[in-house]
Length: 149
Image (tube, rainbow, N blue to C red):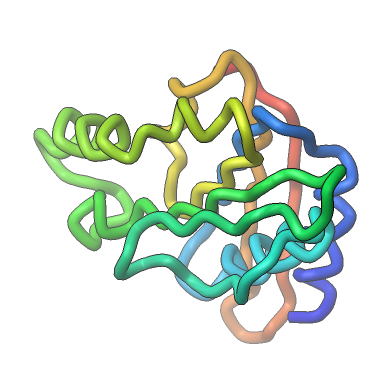
């Protein structure tokens, strides 16, 4: 997990206010560990844990020249089904709108776990982090790129 967090901390060096980071990968791939690393790299305050039950958590900047991070877990918005189901998209988009994440993008980096196929519409460009975990080991593979919204 330390390497996964270190990747997040390195990625944080390329982020700025208004960036949307979508963490995509299966259960156990290390999405929360990457979010923890991003938070450490940004220097935000507060313990970074999966916000599954509260859906979104704001971590204030840890210093005057820093900025905040909003950590979102969209898994519950998908009804516990990472692939969604027939008719779920409209409801999830309504839930995302209710979180007012577009307003957060004016003051923070927004990191969304399980947000692939949903959160991209919040910005003209986003950072997509694709994660995989080898089934028979603890080896994780991470790729990231900037994508159009």
